[in-house]
Length: 486
Ligand code: BG6
Image (cartoon, rainbow, N blue to C red; front, side, top):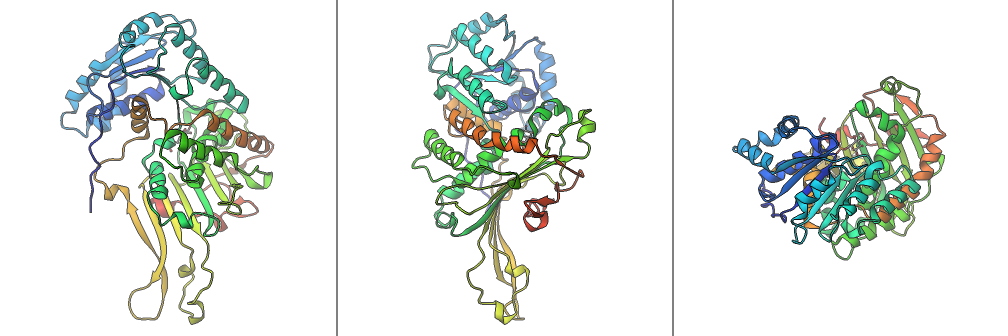
């Protein structure tokens, strides 16, 4: 049965001040997300949107640049042009030089009038982390930090533990932890939140969710794109910093965490932190790195940076001891697919074996597949009897819950949810400072080991290097294209 997603709840009228407001992230993600929320009626015309840029550009030029990124929303509403015109009225562009503070007084004047209201002001720093410190200092000097003001920042939150700590200190010199929203956009993805619903709103999984029933866990984030224009940034980061330290470790946390006693920001984050603190330190045998063949040509230089990484991880606690968590991510692979696969243990005894009726396929373990993208959904792979006469022939079948087919509404982009949460003051889907540091504590030694290994070159359009942890890939990895419908 098709279900529509319930009406969105209004969020408090707020001011969104986007530093780096005419930059790439703002154009591709932030403003389109705000526009969708506006079209859906979740943001009202009382919202104010301020794009702060080093060099001002006329509003109509900005809107022309923004429009292509809002095309999907514009094509989805009958009154889209009216919404677009009204949305444009909410926008102001302000030139501010973060380093010198020039132009800041105008911002203070523009938004300072609402300071005494309960109205949230969200300062989104969509700028290089090197500017975070100066931006916070400037906001403080302009007297724009008050209980209702919030700060949003995004990765890279440091290059390692030490630099992450420096960034934290710069933010915390001005804002309290309750005011800081560290975005990991994976937490805003619908299916990632669904993982929590699956685990903590159903009873059937919890009793199986441990090393007694689960054989291993696989997390794959495969991309078909390469590094393209971002080569200069990416070459300093590599897959370990770009994807694993943040997105993939967050997914590991959500799979492995204990149930919090309440769905509140700190309780959820306390439990995630415990997982990060329980990660087994890795050795060289647990790490595989790769680089796609064209990478150096795109970079125009020689590089050891990994565009692919696979790790065999472990969690040292009673629930997960002995259960490998295999994670992998890579660029220019054969398929775009992100999924979590939980493979259950083999059955303790096979009553069908002697009858000779079981086929190789019917001997597969049960699997739960959580597809994050594309074709978001859940699949539970079971073994059942092939219909009809011919004996007890067993074959794999699936319980398939496709979110697109089940819910008639579109699944919103991660930024839409996260931006609304900043206005609501809900930090559940944002990372706390100690989580970020714990993730770096785990990943720093991994990066150190990986940097001493030469990445294996792999062909574009494959699933990365062939050997993993002493065996070939086929014996470990489940091909994500099987589940992605591609
Ligand atoms: C970003 C990384 O954080 O996430 C990119 O910097 C990556 O390299 C992207 O491509 C993947 O996000 P998504 O939402 O497309 O899976």
